[in-house]
Length: 366
Ligand SMILES: [Zn+2]
Image (cartoon, rainbow, N blue to C red):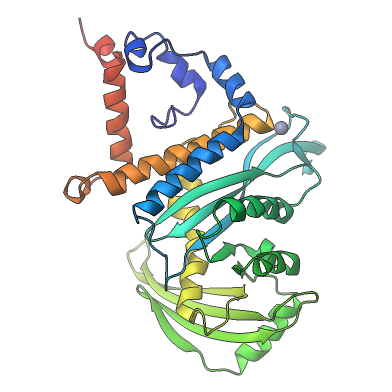
């Protein structure tokens, strides 16, 4: 179902009665209700074990090269997987929303995902559901503890958004021999004030990221945080690119400012590396990660509303995503792959599958 991107158990149920199922899977297809119940009872550790096995296989085949300068990153990112005013379970997170009809309690679930940022691709490894009474960073630390046990040498640094720029998180990561990069975006922070004061007086270095011109400032030794084990390095990039306006085709200059805080010393990774990893985190939103998993793979669909079922479906979707891209990128010959999108291959797989279960024959005119 994941591979065919059916999106719901109902979609799968539609093809349940096709004649080809027994020869394909050795029996009939279970009902949507049964699959939901099985996912609820599934031991998520088993699915994590399969994800780990896929990683090990890729590692053995040397098909997971470093991302930049010999370094591989691990992206940590929170994602709200579902929300509702009506349906809830004992593990739902809740918040009060001010609506036109007054205050209402909204129930939701949030997942933190760990994705490997290597070579030219992103490989989702593991996920953890945020529990009631816990904040996202605490959930991420719980996830990271397991990822460090299961994948101790898979990555060198952790890349995360502004929420994670905290002394407790940075200390947790550096005490385990890894480094951290997080977006610095809160103007009120002491670290930001100190950094801005120093940036103002220093000339920038010019770097190019594709056709984007980056004016970069890179200063280390900030001890503006209490309780931080080691001083923070701050990198600022003022990026200018020219884009054609859709409205009238005229060139328009876009300027964006990026600031990151990191534990990595300049001697270990140069400014360009911080930029590459910092932007690598955002690529997860745009192309390789949540957007694709949610829009193309329907990872957010709530098949059964329990914490275990939601997590089990997410982990299975991650697994399917990894297998699909391993097949496209590693198994297909480059000459066959050229000129085709991932969507094309997904449709080809679905078409072959439908033919195998006899679905296509049924649609053919008599
Ligand atoms: Zn719930």
